[in-house]
Image (cartoon, rainbow, N blue to C red; front, side):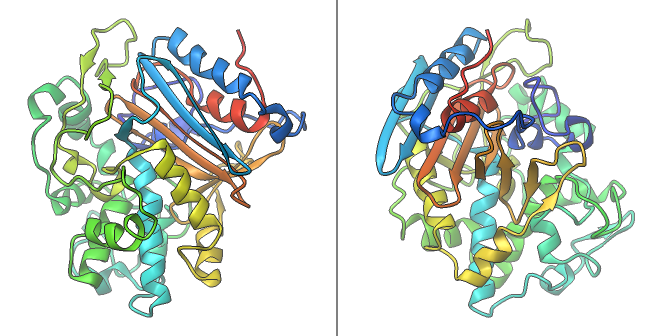
Length: 388
């Protein structure tokens, strides 16, 4: 979850998305340049990944951590001031957890993703052309609802991502108030007619989970994913302002200029993100989650098929598609990966796996104004060292 200011030169359809958390949550896929050496052969010593980590630090990121697993063998690398076991805020990676829970509820017959949002949250999606009767839960999860992204609101951006952060970092946000911010703006398109990333979609999705289960959405994630997979470093913090140890500090300039003063933004009230991006995890847990998800441990075959049914995000980026809270990329070497990226103040994360779960990666940079985490992805899965 980050502001719309540019974090890196490599963002997916930045001008089109420009949706708060999304610039980092949708790290740009590199344009395909033809097959290279097989990734498994290239990654015996993870030399390219090590180089990519160091390149991020050379670019000004205080510290970077990455962990990969190839055919059952784990490797952890760090650069700068980081620990391999660090926990960190994962931002929009939260979205895959939310989608997984809703698909589980559908498999149990408790909800249909093609239900209108109005059925579960009457009156919530109304105003300035928004109409919850015409928007389905599925359209929330694949970002075809047309609902305005609350993180795009100029006042919210200034108070939460800009210099106002220092004054408002401990404020508690009610999720219905976040949705209310979006309702003050017109939809960006009619439901189902286009694609645009909106963090409001997943705040609403979290509220749907709460309506169906009668409990906070975070409890559903805890009981249905975190506990069964024994994800000991993963949590849904609610209003807790700190990151559990072990963890490193998080840093931000709060404004677009790279030369601006750097602020410690580690402590914040993550209710500003709610189900769109509040979770905390570490590299090992994120790999376990995506590996289990894509190998069918969390969803029946029918629901897994729905999760991975993707839509194009832009003709300009044919090698990037979006499913239900999960993305698909074809990298420069032809390798196809599934997962999500995420950003929130001072924390940029990536978590991806091959479809068979044999090769996974999770990484985090503790800065949001510089660096290139997409280069880490290319390095690990393709053996491509960053350009000098």
